[in-house]
Amino acid sequence: MQTASDIPSDGARLVVLGSAGLADGFSLIGAEVHADADPATVERVLEQLAHSGDAALVLLESTLAHAGGFWLNRLRDEGGRIVITELPPLPSPRDYAPAVDAVVRAVLGPDALK
Image 1 (cartoon, rainbow, N blue to C red):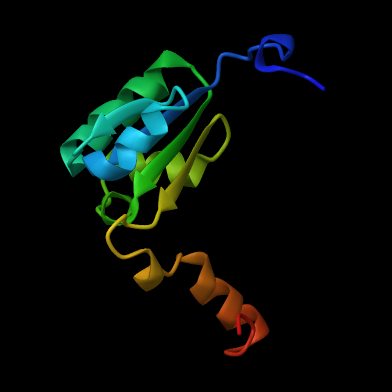
Image 2: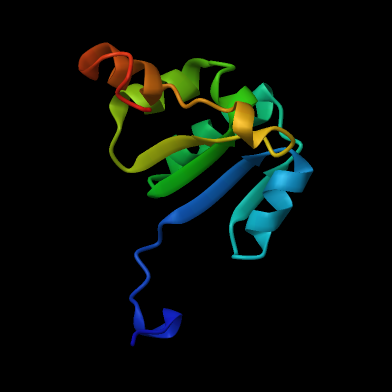
């Protein structure tokens, strides 16, 4: 079985932006955390990632993921070395519906996710 020290590091970053309650849990696994981030913080962090050349997985709390912004939209459209995905809000995870659900229902029909 491989341990973390046996796996070569590729320099990819795990970046989490969201409420303190959600983000703090990710700090326990070594993520780069931006607690209580706002849309301006998201834009600043994404711009820095775009210019750094680093590969990254960026996890955004759903309210931030839907806030839009130049860098958020650009990096989502580009894909590639910076992958952006959203996390459900900590206080109401059952109310969360990812955007991909609407696409799946449109392609496969309204009962596809039941």
